[in-house]
View 1 (cartoon, helix red, strand yellow):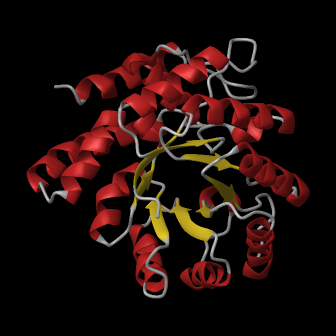
View 2 (view 1 turned 180 degrees about the vertical axis):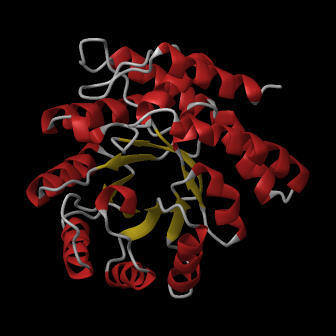
Length: 296
């Protein structure tokens, strides 16, 4: 079972748009050293959508070698081309990834029959653990608890879900319905501010982008919640709520997360691939203001 706080790590680029391998190595070591329970590469914040198939394979090989089994390494392999999804999923398994997480196809709004066939194909192509990725803001499809339960019961290697839905009621229903028949199924929230609510509802934790910025805060928040130290939970949750403002500074919000992580100490820069841009000076000022406010 996957439990705790997992970081969907940023992908560091150079100014010319090429992958900054040294910068990415720094990010991965930083997250390991700060005590993250696991790392996801090639997720949404990892800008998987901007990388070619060859770049994704190179990044998977690099990440597996860099992490070297110190923490579980999840790899994002989802997409709109089924053959490429299968190829990348099998590549991740062969290279030694801990698990894959696959967003459902986007652009067209698929019905649940198509979603089921998509994940059935992913699950059948490997023995590797597979996590579902529900992100209706990007796919226009919100998985019903009944669909998730069906997949969980039909495929033993489908072992969890990242539920990126800005509605804790949806995650709560998943926990109640799916875990009633498969207790080992991991249900992780995709919105940072729902970590505590996820755990209180019987879920398993978070895959949240803000842990790129302040990983220790999320490790401490998770541990405080497990220990039922609710004074600490309240103090740390207040900081998380303030940090959520980073998501509102830019679209895509990856630009803001990268800038915040760099300013907070990584010093890996804020380079984005086109058409996205780095933050302007006014936006950088807003990032600094938010980061400064949680230190007061």
